[in-house]
Image: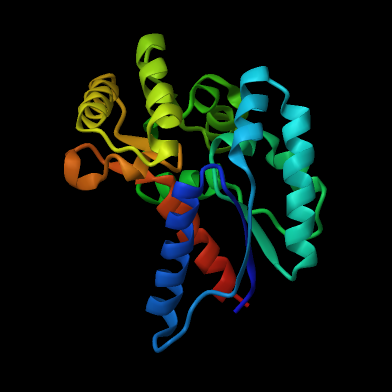
Length: 231
């Protein structure tokens, strides 16, 4: 088993989902009392969130690069960043280490291609939905047609993530709002919807809607397990 590095804390609520999913996956694959060999570095999200609002991505890249280098020194043989939004600095992080970085958008796109989905909706923070570092990668590298909500709905999705989900708050009213937005994306032609923030899976899941959902936390964790068990 290879040792996987988890760069988490953004937020810790979703990072614990990664930890659980990877350990459960390793146990399922190997049986017995097996658990995952991993290195977890969990950052303090408060200063990173402030830098996000300030748009200081260079400062955030320095924080994540330093953390990634520590993870590598601790013995990790591969790295995942346990958040969609902070993949905006994934290239800088990857360049700062000598171990492979498993990109969350690549894992998600590969799942979409496997399931023969070409038109997909994207939910996430406003950074993820509006900027090109994520949806542009899906479009340019994988030729996917990516739909995002209108501006007012993007603000609803973003607000729920930062003011509720990152604080561990699950509200029924927010679930209903998300399901309406998912239905709207489906009506616009999306064959499936990416839950492109690692916290969204805490609020909605496949049992809540007939629209196919792609939980990026689960998909990314599965990609990590595949890496860990491949020689």
